[in-house]
Length: 609
Image (cartoon, rainbow, N blue to C red; front, side, top):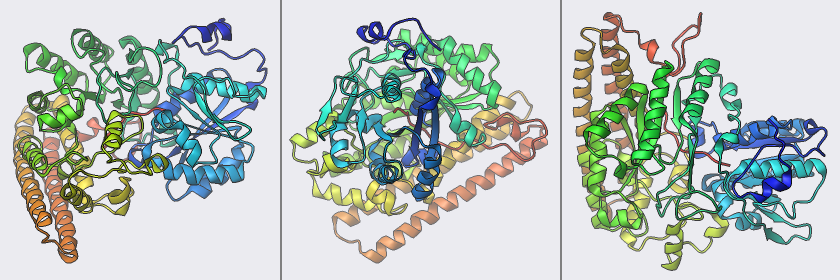
């Protein structure tokens, strides 16, 4: 895609971005860019990175060569050796707090292997800590700030022309004399519809084995959560509107394209809040049009979104919209509940109240939608009393996932909670160097002792110390398995509720599962309180802790086994009624394909450069 607007006129209009090639670049195909995806944290579970996909598509639209390459943890040397054969002119990393260490390792290998390549970083950590990244990683030449498409296009054209980066907006860079310099940030892209559809290299690389495909319907957020580094009202690094949305028609066009081309039908809408810009009449009108468009085009899909609790009331109008969303394929919602304590909600600058949280939990349960809950009981300002109050809230509302009771705050550059912690002397002195998302102290030493104790109860040392998931304990496996079970129920109902006898089978299974989850919630609460009491009274020793790890693993493995057994029985009963479970898979069955298609199993977060 090209335009007739000259470069200078584009630069003079804040927020205006058009994809065009500098006419002096006569052979863009000679310039190559490689985007490296470091498979750490969430990306291990479902690696598609939409920010990178948009940048690759932007470069390709004007003729540059761009590739997306995954780097598996532990296979860095082989990945860089393969990269050398591609011989890129620019190598790009998306930097988060979780992959700072991996980026250091891989960028060092890249520099040794491709000494003339320009190494660039972007992403949330880069946006808010660009200078720190350059100080602590000598292999990185520049760090991009904010949205990546205009910046990577500008950088690539300069590299193609052999021009310096001195006046390139939106970067922090290492000058030839070694001095670190910060150029002014670019404004945000005002009209997102100038962007091409994102490149789907990773979907094609994985042969439709992704847990879900990510789709972005908007950018930004009108909330102001103090722990969040996504662009919102209080932490903008770029000038311009805090929220911008694509039109419902374009969104449904993209989904339809993905369904028709790839036969894929499980999607994760990665917007910070699906019902923004206001969470009210305007935002919900847009959401309604998206859902209706999916139905009008006969797109048989499933999808997940993020919502904010304060935007939903138990009214006829909101319940009607929720019904429409479910009919169009909504099956999972991520809500930042964060706390069952009013004072903590104010600490996070949440607009929702505890009662708002209870309302949306009930609404989602009533509509058969799986709730993926954000919750932060452990943080520098937590007390033993707030921990107990939060444990009770979870027990009474959604307590079957033990990890919710034991979650620790992850901190990210550019957030206001970091500023507060630094002012209160709770931020580690080396945070700017490490960007460690657990790089803080607790005001109450007892809470810190509890936080570390609970984190060590499941998974390995990578999670305990760094929050990086390299292997799954039964506690983690139950979380993803629990999504599978819930979507099994919702998909079977949606597909076969008119089949005589199917509803009775499903209702009995739902009742059985609800009772099991209630018992698990009580078990988790008693386990949490027992451990709290033991830790506070210094009654735990190494052997007792070892046995606890074994007990937790055994308990959750047994619950997974019980549910699988009951689910198998339900599947057989439905099969006898003529209901084929293969019809609820994440991918559309291909003619002549053998075996069962893959079923959706994961959770997701947003992606950016």
